[in-house]
Amino acid sequence: MKAPENRHSLTFRILLGLLLGGLLGLILNALRGFLPGAAEAWIDPFLVEGLLEIVGKAFLALLQVLVVPLVFISLVCGTAALEDVRR
Image (cartoon, rainbow, N blue to C red; front, side, top):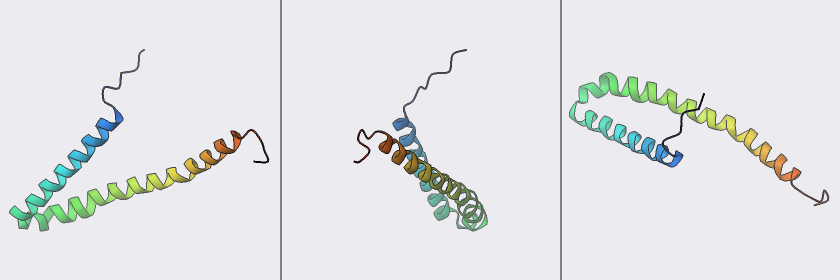
């Protein structure tokens, strides 16, 4: 069975995520201005301080988990690539 082809490049996906995140921020900010009661009722406590904060903290934790093995593997590969051990 053939794997599905990747139709979009990583750069496109990153730029799309950046654009969608910016649009979400603009929409939430506009809703806060037009509907101040809604901002106090569900935008701030549920979305901003709840869902988005949890997702953001999880993303940062995953990045921190990746850093240590990445640095270790880089050092091991760099050391293994040396031709002269005394270097």
